[in-house]
Image: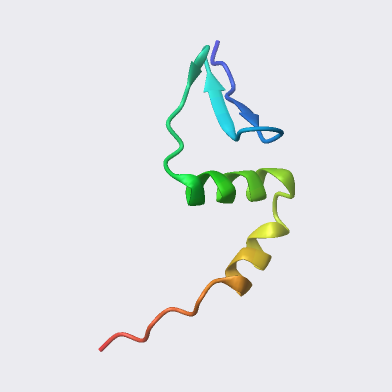
Length: 58
């Protein structure tokens, strides 16, 4: 039986699976994970809208 990871967003953002904390990267990655977890589906549009536009290539 596979165990599901536990995502903690109240207090320090963390993901625990099989009793082990997973490496989530730096503060930006942790904030993004927390934002997506709190309001899945809706927050992604807000994050994309607030980020700087991509540069045109060539």
